Length: 174
Image (cartoon, rainbow, N blue to C red; front, side):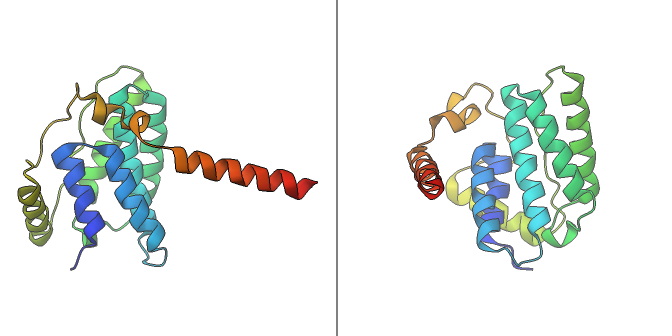
């Protein structure tokens, strides 16, 4: 099965850089560009898994629990095997992370998505090799540029778009 490049990149970021913010960005862009591919719930569930990891690693246990719960709702009923993922393993890990975050005791652990298709593994390893990355590293717990990435991004376009929408809304009411 041919896998989308954005999905391969997501998996590499998820396992080789642990840059969960980038995982979110990659898969969200792909999901929005391919609304009719029939995998929307899976893409969103995988995005939520990455965002849950991002929040949990930063100590935002409430935000992580919310994301894990929503990911479970989508991925526990979804067919992940065509995308080369072991659903049972992922659901077990999501339930474990949800339990930990709901307990309120910080005990962060990386989720590892179990790949079940050899061709998917090969594509991921090839991209890792091309980028000089190692698959399966632990989260860089002291790398502020990865841990707090959302604070480092340029949001000027988003802010300008929101201001323009607010202005248009105000002008429409007059």
